[in-house]
Length: 381
Image (cartoon, rainbow, N blue to C red; front, side):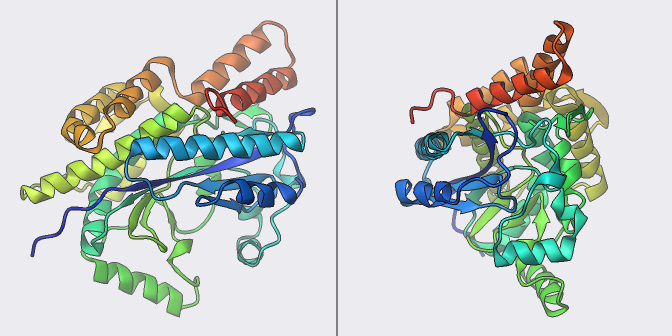
């Protein structure tokens, strides 16, 4: 039975931190009016509270191509930042605030979050992290599962490009994405399970629902999952990127990977599916070293610089980037490799500031300022 080609429409969700522009601390109790004002100014888009009151989540409308996603994300970042400034707050698109303390933060009073706080206890109270999720429309459910099984291999490469959380509670964590180590404290996270069919996946989720583990599949917090709301394959592993161009590059590359895998299937070929533990090893390397690391090429097997492997992915998906109209965005991944991801820039600024005589706290304030500036760089609000 042939499968109709997916539309590969995309949607991007980003989570932001709200920062007091005087102290550079997280806003513990930002005014509720920020959310309602953003909703009023952004019809057609998604603006919602996140688990912590210091966060806000936005989502684009369904975008036919990366150009539409660029326009939508520009409007979302620009408008949300403008509203936040009216209340003395800045918008920070980084996965962790460099020196905030999660013990001081409060979760949003909402039934879903109340239940999560009750069930997860301390593991969720420290969830002072933000991520970027990319939805790509794969309308056929059987194909969605097949592509999830194969595409998991590429997730560490995308994580490396996105890393933006090298600090935790005022200290250099030694990881380029400390966010991942925090998120992994929750259940049902990490590399997704493998499924032979949509039916097997449905039986899996039904078992957990019937057993009372959760109400629905939206509480499967894997690095990639079939969306519980939309006919999409949702990539969830990446840190949120301060520079919007970086976010668009990752979203474009993700959609191209999925189209490439579909194209292989159409030719009766497929990507080799490796054990989850092997993929998880690359995930750890990307989390630890980012684009400066050497990910394992399991076909050799040997460690290879992340930049070389990402260049191979760009070559593999060249036909798909042309078909989806995102060649420039995919090519921008080379720029991320060349000058580093956000985590690399944050660390370089911190080390230079401390080396010049600044206190660690003052150096971290400069990091916050850098991220605040990058979040709205080139965006008219």
